[in-house]
Length: 373
Image (tube, rainbow, N blue to C red):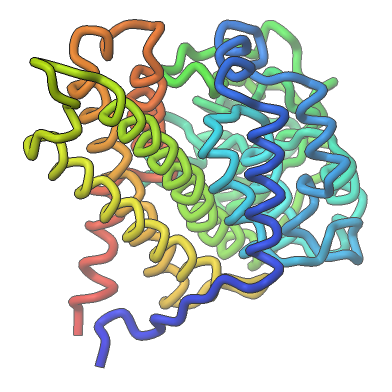
């Protein structure tokens, strides 16, 4: 009997087609030169590229067709994020997808108006962290009796371009979701963070005095928050695995062209073996990611799904950290420079570890899930 319980894994024809289309999109519209051109811009992405993604239906890919989505299920988003990770492409898709999942899981079709906007390309984001700890309760923002919020959130992804904030708050000790329009938040309340991965953006947002456009209450809110954090780990793992694959391709290309002492450096076992380790780690992470994609759905995530999401995040984080480090080392002094793509990979690895819990965070929780009797 497997300690994992459900070990099913599949790549459906639909997912395979999405992966091919998304990889082609990245190749044609977001080569590494285009990504680099956005690194020091205000948003970190090209507005035209984002609009193209919306037109392809990716903004609503994980939401039901009854609210304007594609009705393909959250597992269908996995191959898209793997491909986007392979291009190190920074867009608000991850933030918006998760905001949609949180609203949908907490309110269902009663929130069709908000969900329809997200499917149409309005950018949503979740304001969750009170500090930097994914393991804390993170309900420091309170909804008062006057209907206004009090408190601030940290590291709100894509806050500067968000149209809708989904703020995790407390009301009388119970969790609620305060849906806030960007127009209700003063520009001075948004303070940009400096992230190590320049393809990503985040900011601290002070919601004090802001009156939400809608407040979602009920027993479903707690479960929706928990499940959305797990899905965040899974989709981030998919993106990270794609980035690790891109890093591996960069390494192997360099090993086949760079000569040292009259020989291709790829002929040295000291470089061959770590490269194989990256490949094995990347394929291992992909297996966990697509296992997760196979068993997550619109319903509340069960224990098997929770285990799958957490294991995918652990595997993806670890291979990306190792791949980024080896890429820098293999390129020698050049690997430490801004001109070398190795710096993009190692920065992505550092960012990924901080999103939706790192390996230690998830291993701690996996221990009780897998080992407790």
